[in-house]
Image 1: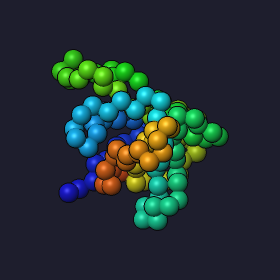
Image 2 (image 1 turned 30 degrees about the vertical axis):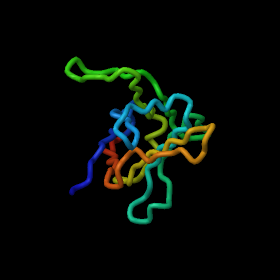
Image 3 (image 1 turned 120 degrees about the vertical axis):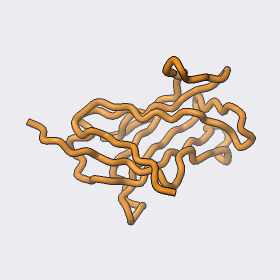
Image 4 (image 1 turned 60 degrees about the vertical axis):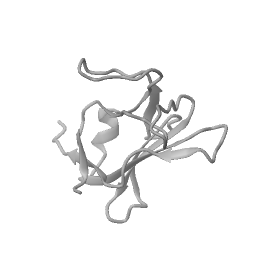
Length: 134
């Protein structure tokens, strides 16, 4: 299976949207109040973080938000469904020098630290489309 590629245009405002959040039984999982941490890691090292997002961002981290879905007209939303939005700004991406990164998101329930999930697949990559900033 080839990797899923999410493309980000350098110097733009963007949102990575995570939909269809389900528990292991396939039921809607509402991660409201959970800690969300998204990271882009260097390939092939995987332990070097190139970019990150958090529900409590610090420094250069982008903001991660759990919110109501904003579906397209043809999308079906189940009752209680929430989406995760990872926001990026031009200021955040202008300093990025990488081209492709391994991308994943972890969510952790604050009242039960043993209840956590990795929601993106191991084969999801971010691709940065570099631009000249004047």
